[in-house]
Length: 129
Image (tube, rainbow, N blue to C red; front, side):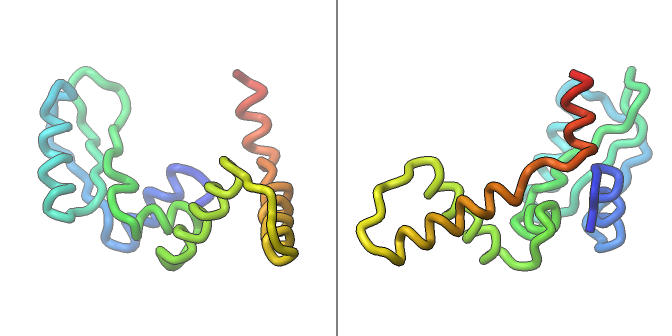
């Protein structure tokens, strides 16, 4: 389970889904061209370690596949991602329940939302802004 960006990058690397690029690259169009070609070929995420004029690396296409999105969300299967999408859609445009089962389903979604409050580290990050 990855708790932050560094952890997620390590997870991708451990799963063979990250390629480190050590060569000098230009952030003006070169990174975009390389990453587009790699993504179209179904390739891994990229970590450019030597970006011209930058003092930090650039990570790109970290969530370029459904599989990697699932990993980022601590999910194992795309079905879990679909279920989350349905729940979010239900919250975006809620409709009055016509049956008791619909009311129960909506209550479950609301309960999940209440349980999903941000953790302390997120609260500290937001308070700094």
